[in-house]
Length: 294
Ligand code: CP
Image (cartoon, rainbow, N blue to C red; front, top):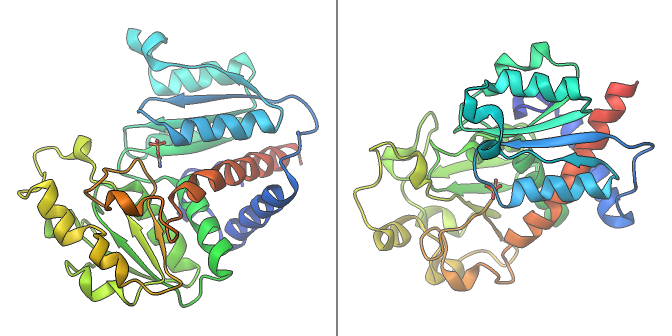
């Protein structure tokens, strides 16, 4: 593993290696790396959990985190992403994490970089570390992927999480079904009937309605109507299988994708996903730096 930019670039063996190391770290603690490494998290889009989760993982690994805020950087003077990343490399960073609103921004970078790049999310493209923490959370609960019925419901076409998880979960042997309004299906086969899936799914993964990416293609119906047709209502939650789990990458639009009362309910893994993100990201960083040193 040289960089982690999308799920296609990882083999199933590499995914399982990350999961295994994250499991070890969760059980035994995150140990510091053999020396001090320098990292920066270049986030050009808002983030609560991905950025702070990376920073927590980096600090627990004993890394020095070099601060970066686009609003006080030379980005405002017109500096390109390429020049920003090459500048950080020249300053002496060992690894860089980037989130950027442009789909596949990393394609112009990776062939020119001497340090590993981790994609923290590119536009509506990919969010590989979210997918890895999602599959870790599923594996932790079920101990397998083969044959699991995973229903992913929501704003599919705008979701980098949906695309990343479609790639990883199908490859690992899960049956993935997409549920969404006709307007938001994108490239995927889908159904609009969440009720037909609810009693059969092992994992119900809800996706945020991404208002900020709706360039005039927003929904014609209200939040209430979306919740009624595509959301996890209290009534639908009653019909989930006993062993089923509820996931959401968050942030959550409360009362839209999921009823308020269900966010911290026993079946919900939403905060476990956040917790697991730290271990998965620490595992990824450790493996990337190890690969670079070999
Ligand atoms: N799940 C996720 O990517 O959340 P943030 O946008 O808060 O990082």
